[in-house]
Amino acid sequence: MKKTAIIGGTGVYDPAILDDPKTVVIVTPYGKVTLTEAKVGDQELVFMNRHGAGHTIPPHKINYRANIWALKEADVGQVLATAAVGSMNIKMAPGNFVFPDQFLEFTKARECTFFDGGENGVVHTDMTEPYSAQLRHCLERAAKQILITYHNGGVYVTTEGPRFETPAEIDMYRRFGGDLVVMTAYPEVALARELDMHYATVAMVTNFAAGVAKYNLSHKEVLDTMEENAYKVRDLLFAVVPLIAKGLRECNEEEDIIML
Image (cartoon, rainbow, N blue to C red; front, top):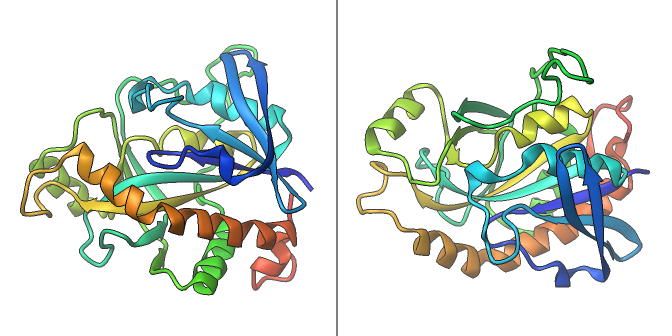
C-alpha cells in the first residue's frame, strides 16, 4: 500500500508526534522539498510542514507544485491536509472539525497546475469530487471513535491572503454557498487530483469570519484556538491512520471501492 502523508498547516507542525522520524530532501522540477518520513505504529507516514520552519512562508508564497510533486515522488497515495480555518456557517463553530467535499477558488497569482503546456502537456482534470469521499468516510469513523464534533462535507473557499477577508467579501462567499474560508486549500487539492492522489482536508475551525463574528479578527486568536485543540488534531490523525491502513474498502459502504 502507498504511504499516507500529513500536511501540517497552521498550528500543526510537530513531527515529534511520529515514531522514528528522519528527514528526506526531494528534488522536484519545481524546487527542493524537505519531508519527514516516520511511522505511527507500523504504518509508514510522510509529514510535510506547509509553511516551513517557524511559519515563515505565507500562504500565497507556498511552493504548492513542488510540495505535491515531492509527495508523489515519496510514494504517497493518500494525503491528509490539516488547516486552521474561519467559518461562515454558524453551525460550524470554533473548535469543530470539518471535512470539506467542495471548494470555491478566489486566488489571484498562484501556479496552480502541472499541465501548463510544457513537457506535461495540457490536461483538463475532472474536479467533480475534489476531496476523496473514501478518506472523508475514514475521517468520519475516526471522529466518532474519539468523540469530537465534526461535519462531513462543506464548501471550502480559498482566498489569496495573507490578509483576512472583509465582511463584504465574506457576505459574497456565503451567498455563493461557502461554509469555510482559508488561504491554503487551493491549488493544493487540485494538484493532488492531477497526480491521482486521494486527498482530504482536516479543517479545524478557529474563528468565525469577518462579519459573522461580532469583533475584529486576529492571528493570535487562530493560534490560541489551535493550541487549545491541537491534541484533538493529533488524536484524530492517530485514529484515522489505522483505518486507512486497512484499506478504503473497510472505510466505505461500497464493496467495490479499494485502496490505491
